[in-house]
Each structure stands twice: as C-alpha cells, then as structure tokens.
Image (cartoon, rainbow over all chains, first blue to last red; front, side, top):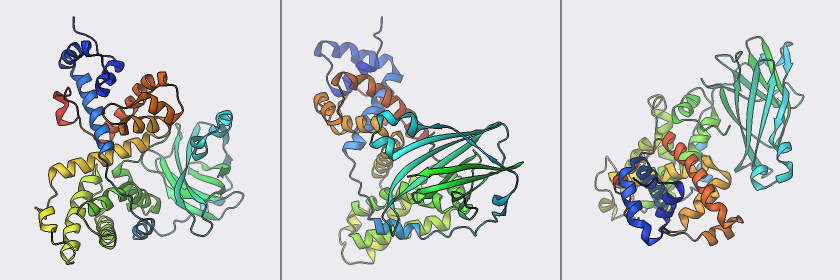
Length: 208
Length: 194
C-alpha cells in the first residue's frame, strides 16, 4: 500500500531532516502523489526565490516622483455628503478592542472594523504604511473597505471628511466588487457612503 | 478582509482617476523595476531615470493594459528596454551589450526568476503577520534550516514550527496560485535538493 504523505513528511523531506531509512519510501510516495510533489516543488521554489532575492528597494524620492506622474481625476461632485437622509452605521467589531489583551506590533500596525446598518455591512481594514506625512513625519494609513448586503449599490461613491465635518478630504468610488481604498494621515474621520436611498455614515473613525 | 486588489482592478481604478490606486501600483512594482536596472549595472541616477520612464510609459499605456492580468510581465519587458536605451546614452556601460543580448526581450530565464521573486515577495506581504515571519525565517535558513534558531528568532516553541508552517504555507500556496504562480518546471522531479 502506498505511503500517505503528510505535511510533516513533506516538510521534513524539504528540510532534509527525514530519517535516512525513510528516504526511499518517501521518494517513491512522491512519485505516486503528484499533488504532494507539486506542493514540495512550490515550497522549494518559494524558498529558493527568497534565498536568491537580490532585489533593491528604490530610494524614497524616486518613488515619490513616480507617484507624482499621475494626474488625479477632477474632484467629483460630493454635494450628496450633506444629504438629510443620513443613517449612522453601528460599529459592531473593532479588532483593537478584541485584541487589547494581546497587543503587539502587528495589532498596532493593522486593525479591522465592521459596521452594520439594516441590511448593509461594511468591513474596514486600516494598515499603517511606511510612507510618512511630508511635514509631520507621521506614518500614513491605508484604509480598505468593502460593503456587503442585499442593498449594496452597483456604483458606490465614498467620501472621507474630518470627524464632524462635511468638507471632503478624499473622494473615491468602489470597484465592481464594492471594494474601495484610500490613504489618510493619522486622525479622526467620518466615512460617507452614497447608497441608493441616502447616505450611510461611519462616524468618528480613529485612524492612528 | 485584507483584500488584495488585482492588477486589472488597480488599472481600472487609475483610469477612474484614483491616485491611491496609482500609488499602490508604484509601491507594489517599484522594487521589481528598480532592481532590474540595478542588476544591469546601472548607477543610481540612471536607475532612477529608468524608473521614471517606465512608470511614465505605464501611465500612458494604462488604457491598453485595462485587462492585463499581470502587470509584472509588461513591466519587466519595458524596464529591460528602458535599461538598454538609458544605458546606451551613457559611456559608463561598455558591457551593456553583453548583459543585454536581445534588446527587445529579456532573457526568459532571468525574466521568469525576477517575476517569481516578485510574486513570492508579494505573496508573503499579503500573507503578513507571524506566518510571513515564520516562512521567511525558514526559507532564509538555507536548505536545512535550524528549528532551534528559528524558534529563538521568533520567540516560539520549537514544537509549534511544524504545524504552524503547514498552516501558513497552505495560505501562501493559495495566495501564490491566485497571483498566477505556476508550479515550477521541476515539479515532476522534486526529489533533487535545491
């Protein structure tokens, strides 16, 4: 009966730590298990790529200049932010609260939030970037979001304002998967999502 | 969530005028582009010229690349050509003709290796957290990594390395396949040490 290749065996083989008396049987087993052979090959290939990685990060000014090549679209009309038909979404999950007991560098670098309102839910993930604000030197944050639920509009506009303000700082549109992404300086913000029947506000989002 | 935006999604977002999408492309591919110029021996200033030219060309070509599933292949070829063009204008690189045999197309072995390195790095970045740290430590540990060393480096028990690695690599495997990483050619002969 052919030997079944477990993860433990596959990785022991990859690391060269398999006992010598098992080597022949495992070698034969790989020939009978193409999926395990592919897994081993991918593992070794990934390891080799990392070991041989001779890439060099471009200097920060080089990156900044390349980013400045882009011509942003003209400011969209965001008068809808001031709509009277506003609904405030409820924060139902904050990973910073959930993971407060196991606070680590990773949890301080990235956190997740979930908001809900009626049939609509919004998942947010904030990630601290290595790029900084030119004047203050504070790290910038990337805020990614996705809206779900049956009332999800086909085209979703998103505007970010300072908390309590209606003056847009950033305006963007979600893609076909209702996913959006903005970059922000540390601070407190309101997110305004334009839905078919009004505006959904995610209030007082602390990005820091 | 940790959703990764695909290349077509980033390009379409750029075409809608989203600066953040363009920034993400430059962040994601900048290292790949810059490293090619350095591998061809270009000095900082010329590598910088290549970098700006490549991203300028990309910006002008976005509409045509709307459905390009992997920008890396286009960027590798374009960077290769720009390196030759910038390099030939200078007298600093007499050896450039030897390094670049075909002006139009990079050496397929090099191109494949560069793209794979880029995708593995990208995959590990998407993986993030402890999984990324563990796999990096094991990968960098050579062909026979020391579990004791890896455990000490990451502050985890030696006994947890095996199961955690299996879980983490399963996640990385999924990400790499989504990024379009193919099983290497040597899949049929995985028994040779690498």
